[in-house]
Length: 287
Image 1 (cartoon, rainbow, N blue to C red):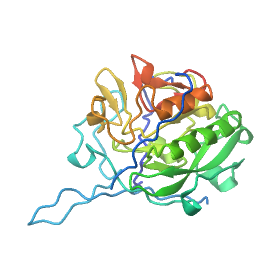
Image 2: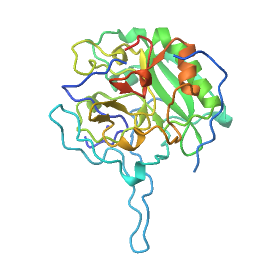
Image 3: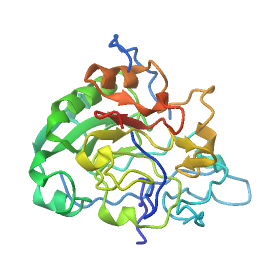
Image 4: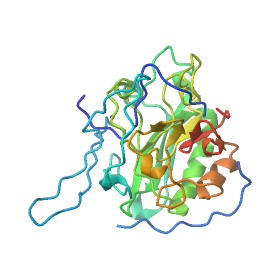
């Protein structure tokens, strides 16, 4: 998320409630978005509106900590103008796919990747039961990139297939990287947008483990698909994306390519839940 900028939204030590299908159908391609492993840097910038008298001020993800609410999350603030129609460029952490063709790999988790992840011996899944995936994805910059993800071995092949279908549909992702341990306790900034799976943490407001702690859940473009419960919005600056009546690239909506692709491997979508509504969340466990 230090000061290391991060695109993953943060989990406070005391949290609320995350427990996080539709029939398979042909994917309808989305319009093209306009415009190995080492510890990645996650700073992300985009040009803010310029004036004749002042240079553009870039938006840097993770640069401004938010004051905390009593529940430990950051204060929910209006979405900054630069992020209302979010289309930040992707910084390549791994070499992009050759020839803009989808490519994926599945392997045991390399020691250096495990060391920079949230895994530790107290986690409810053994390191040997996780897999390290690299997968192609389209960025909001209209270019093909390669991302990384840790998932449970039982779901690895299915997840690689899902993201292959999203690549074919040109569904854009801002970034895809392994969540680092220090992100779990870093101050909230409310502007992260990393697509990720394994994170060793409890479910919000509970003592039981999240499906993410088993590598059996994936969050897709969190900023574009925020979690809501009562007055809480996560990420905390993503309020502009709570209104789903105006479609923007990277949003997940009922029956779309993303929902159908996950449903085809038996994973359900938290966007169907009423309270909380977890639009980013896909899970193999129903939680």
